[in-house]
Structures are given as structure tokens and as C-alpha cells.
Amino acid sequence: YVIGGEAPAAQSLEIYSGCAQSFAVTELTANQPWLKLSPGGENVPMKLSLEVNPDGLAPGEYTATIRLTINEAFHRTLEIPVVFTVSE
Image 1 (tube, rainbow, N blue to C red):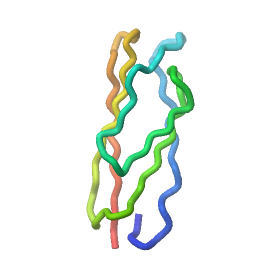
Image 2 (cartoon, rainbow, N blue to C red):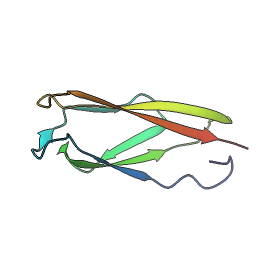
Image 3 (tube, one colour):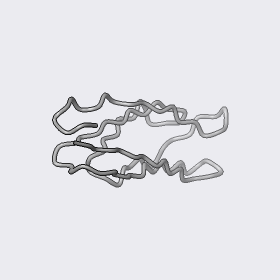
């Protein structure tokens, strides 16, 4: 993203549990306020939309972590790293 330019378009992810079975997502969070998550449902597999709000961010590289908890899955927690770069 270049400061003064248009905000980046939303990106989407397809998230799967690794099983054919559907599981409920009990937690879905991002640890940074500039990252907005919009899930396409309450179960995996799911489509997850990611939007960034660059307002007030200085030039630099920003990192965030998306965390999903699926209590019924073998691996209960999934963490997805996100990197967002702001330049002048």
C-alpha cells in the first residue's frame, strides 16, 4: 500500500480443517486493529475475507496473526500470519 493511494482490496482465504467433516469455529480473531476479518460462515471449511485499514499507519512493515480455534479438530488452533507493507 502506498500512503495517499486507494485502500487495498479485500483478500479472501479458503480455510479447511483437513477433514471432509464440517467443524464449528469457536474463536476467530486478529491481533491487530488494522486487520478486519469477515467470515463466510461459522464452520470450516469457510471462506474468510480480510480487509486492512491503513489509516494512521506510518511507512513500514506490519505483522498480524489470525487465530482460529476449532474445538472438535485434531489440531485445535490454527494461526495464520499476515504481513502488510506501507510505503510512501
